Length: 197
Image (cartoon, rainbow, N blue to C red; front, side, top):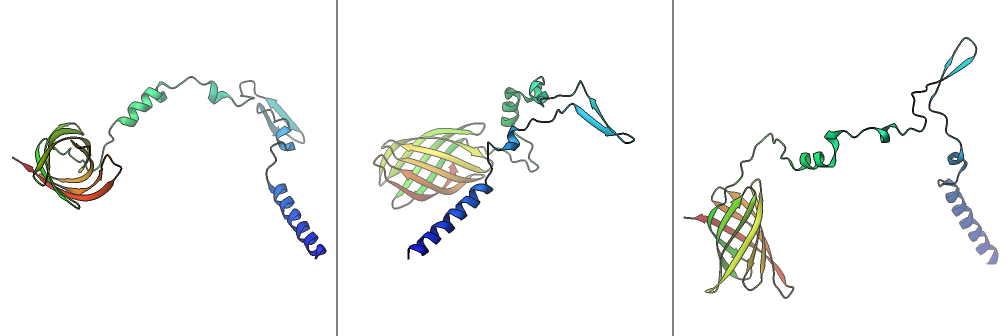
């Protein structure tokens, strides 16, 4: 029994040693060797090797670090380039959502939401009335559009947050929402609505 355990331990040590030898050694001799001089160029002549030193070459390979900064690649330029809208092969006109909207919210209860929305570019904000079972309360909204999708948050007076994802189709909205109350509860529902005149 003891011989079997000793044999198993020997195999385990041998496997671990083989794996450790296969790993890269950061203090190995290949790191400590002196790098070759990058200024040296050589050519083979008739029967001998000639070595030339190029005084303009970079012996430490730091030329990219010492180059002057390109003004087209500073962080200010890159920031402006990253927030600029890129040309879309299929241009999507920004949906005009300004006006009055009537939405029907359906989950375990039925709610009606009358909103007046304002728009500044893709930013949407507004206020309205949320009614459930004949009880009306104020509601405030903010969100944004992205092509034909409206992302809208509506906060009611009793501190229920409705987070909508709605598809915009001319004068119609449809989609779903997540609702969160102040006690930590949450639920989902569907919403449909249309522009009112």
